[in-house]
Length: 203
Image (cartoon, rainbow, N blue to C red; front, side, top):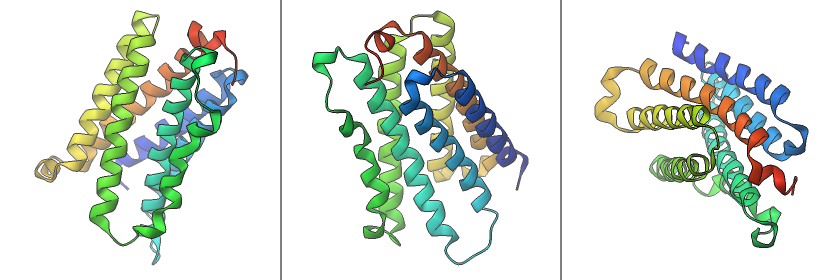
């Protein structure tokens, strides 16, 4: 394990602790979904160290679960930003959970799994940009969120473009860790302070 992987684990653990403590209880759906994502990231990093026959399957399921739950967070956020009369059914926010459930249908097909992960990441990044940057009410959080999106996007580009792999894993992992930490902070601030979300309550 290189230092950048340890950094991801530490930042994920600190982010989970911060969200657990700082995110208000009325947002429990987002709180526990965020905790699931961050804890899954920790398990994913640890699983890479273990040597057993099905470790690659566990890694793929964890990755699909992580990004699927990120989409759930975005759907919940988008729903809460709408007036009550315009909200779609709450159960639809958890529709992305279907993605890892369908994993047995694509297991062993690395190209399809990579395509699914890429599409999920693109959807998550675009949704994050649209939702957070258009609804933040404080300039400092807006700046930090913009920075987090740039770091996570850069990390994804370095990870998926093979021609850039010579740079080393440490760079994209470091960018991802910093972006993850910033996003944990700004998402918590966003939920605690945004008037549109807090106006309409939990569901």
